[in-house]
Length: 252
Image (cartoon, rainbow, N blue to C red; front, side, top):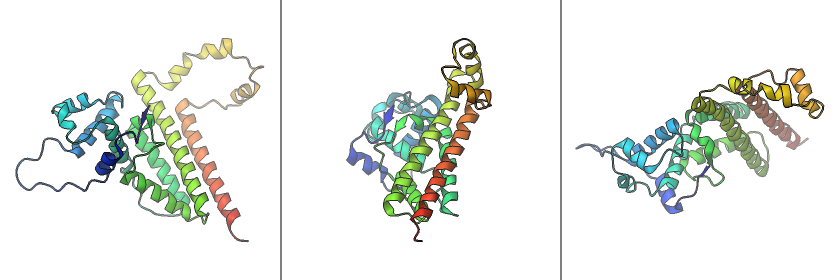
């Protein structure tokens, strides 16, 4: 598990909030820039995983020496923050429609983001990179939820709840896809290979609720379908709860 926010705070903030680099009108462009480094790091992590994204391998992919990278970024900790924030900036956070539609659109985009960048699932952002991607996301969610009329404290808590649920569910969905890709075995085949558990080990009398769910079709879907359904149900329940809180808070 990697953790964001572990690098030098001053250097990280300087890099996160760097101004756009002007295009050079004359001469050859530099072989490597911070933007190219971040893009190459994300591509490497997308393909081989974040653990495989070492500074040596990254330098080799760019055709430069490892020490060249350190003239642009202090180390991997700061680079991970730049990668995470760059990923968040891929979200289209144009405000449009009622608050619930905005949150649902954000959630769907987040799932797609984790599918594109499965390494996001192994980065803890409890201490987040304080970059433009993070702030744009938080501002979008708070603006949408402020439309409910909830007090500021509840609006902030609702936003945190959405981030916690959506990020976790998106990571779970991405993990299913990643596990199939790296193992070469589908979820259905994995469960089929363990059918002996249900036939020889599982005791319905000891676990009656599981048995009832099984007998009544509760586990008929594939693992991927079950995770997708759990995401849809959980998001709907969460937004229903926020809507109910908003109704209860309105003056009578």
